[in-house]
Image 1: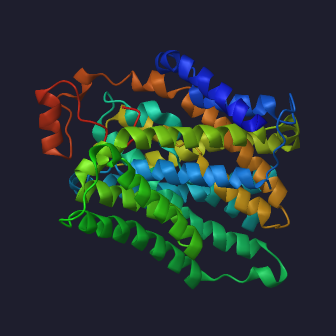
Image 2: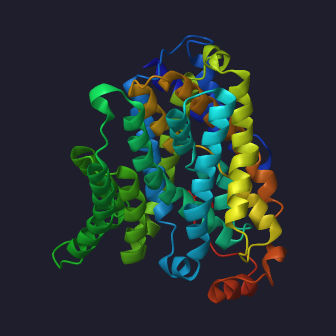
Length: 419
């Protein structure tokens, strides 16, 4: 109950300061992270949470599922078909480059063996724009840039998971060393299948003449789909993250009215899940955790944030129609978020030889990333002005006409809803 009280106080403070945070470098994300650290064993000792506590994995898992579900509802299939090359570049070239780059600096600067180093690279390869919400949620930012960041983050979590599981198996010893590649592929396929089939089935049921939701209950229909998907994925070991993102995208395509009804509720629930997970994760950030990381580890963390992600994405965007400012913004905003938290916990709980060292590096990198990216999103978003968008070539002629017609740009194609 102490944790509930702490969460309530942190939530109240965050709401009261949210207006100030929207105008400055102050971040509500940072407040929850610091709040968790202050009430943990490393400071006031009000709550006692360790990496193997069930609440850590559950809150991170729920938050990631909720964020991806709402993210998927901001994907426009027509715009995605017109601009699929940019996300494909980020996923097909940028993500592998970041994966390999992180593995190299982990091996040479931290001293982990090659398998564990590549495991760290796979865990830290996914990005999470929920910690850069002013970029993916502000209308001043070009829609194609928001779409790139949102689609990349929505899909790369699922792409990284099989690599993480394979490398965990490879780093294990004895009977745990076998790799069930077919089982991993099945989990991914089932997750994607659940995410597509579920909303399609529900949309057909809703069209039955005898059925129909009362207006005040309409927002609960997508929520019910999300809850069923979450439970089904965990009962069958299907990939819940691919299921969440694909379900959100399919649902808004087959039932735009469902998205409109659910959006306020969905965004609020995703924010609550995010804040709860941040508070719990912050409780893990004790002085001992930071003391356990070597100087080489801190160098690797800094390079991961300011070099590896920016360089890998900039290389992947060579030859695209993004402006220089857009490329630099996309390259900088590669925050590590809930997917990395969940996968880092898998590494720790697997009991591999260098699992503790790997988790320490991962946790510190996530913490630094959250602080760096959530405190720079507003200033960078303000560099994009509505006037800047007029006349810039766009891969989608219709989107360009809309922006030119009314100087309030189109709603975010990709966002966690902070519009």
